[in-house]
Amino acid sequence: MIKTILTPLLGDGSDENVLGFAHAAAAQLAAHIYALHVSRNPVDDVVRLTIGDGVITRELWNAIERDIRDRHDRARHSFDAFCNARAIQIRNVPNATPAGTASWHEVEGGPAAETSLRARFNDLVVVSRGDNISGFSPRELGEILVRSGRPVLISSPKTMCSKMFETFAIGWKDTLETAHMMTAAMPLLETAKRVVVLLASENSHEEINHQHAERLTAELEWHGIKPEIRRLIPKEVSVAEALVDAARKAGADLLALGGYGHSRAREFVFGGVTRYMLEVAHFPVLIVH
Image (cartoon, rainbow, N blue to C red; front, side, top):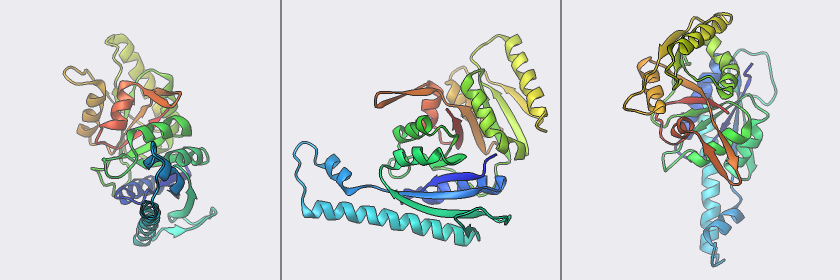
């Protein structure tokens, strides 16, 4: 079950977008939105900005502190305005009301690191993909994906979510990560009106692909889901591009897939499809590592 949704708010232009996706999932699952704002420590910014010379002026310190305060205030305003507009109740403990609920939390630290840590105490994470101005960077998204241990829904800055996820696309590949994704995504799949399975396997053996389609159909039918099975045969584009294109053409509201990657020292190494979803895809995706 998915009952708590961690939603980090950065105090930038991405907050309304990510709250929209979190609310869509919360409404569909009768879940609680755990809104989190992480304020940077000004000392960390000073170290980053003055590396090499160690010089810090009063003007620079004041500017850093002002930016941190402004981001906090913008995040809180976005949260309050969003909840007021949708009659979302502010509660810090569970209750029996069927109406949507949310709570506000703030800590100090690194946004990606704190999100990863607190995600472990929630069922789902909804984050915003960066656009060079707002949202999380691809590296930060990778950190959250690898270190949180939770399904991560990455909103698209070019898509506003104003309704529940009615059509769900699944990027299927016969891997452990995809199996984990199917388990994590099942609460959303069971509430969707349509589920489209995209056989993204690069294996061209028709008999194997047919077996996968049969087994998936049989498994999903036990959950009351009658999936549409579509086979992808990428030719002039990558598998990742083919997945997004097929999901869009199917009218999907969300694309789910397994995330392939690991951390190595301070770097995160991902497979081609996962990297594309973190860096490029202008489509909302649910990724499970």
